[in-house]
Length: 130
Image 1 (cartoon, rainbow, N blue to C red):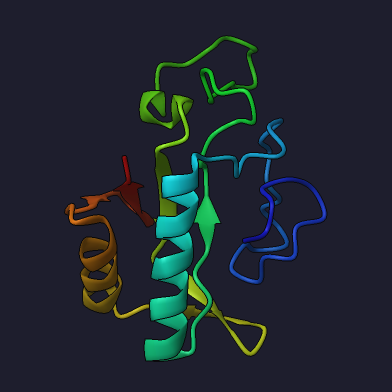
Image 2 (image 1 turned 60 degrees about the vertical axis):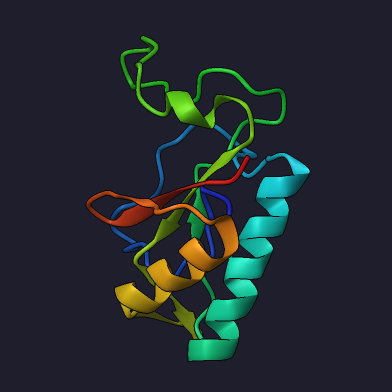
């Protein structure tokens, strides 16, 4: 997955809306979460040819993830503190272009791998793997 920082290679992010997160790297996780994300990614690639987009896993040393422009810590992403959570976008990449997943297929593969139903958000599934 592309890192969520300046000079991203993510074709799904408009050039006019560069990432503003001061966190990098933001894709650290426990081995079980890494294995789950890889299994979901492999299943989606084999099923659809689409590469998944993963964002907001955990910081390398854990801890509170969100930091806003006013430099005050926000309570969101509490679950992302210990490397057991990841956000998988509803769009992915195929042949260098941004494409929208069949959301039901993505949810199916997430549930098959994690044995848990992902939480739905505006533009991504929140995935948990113990």
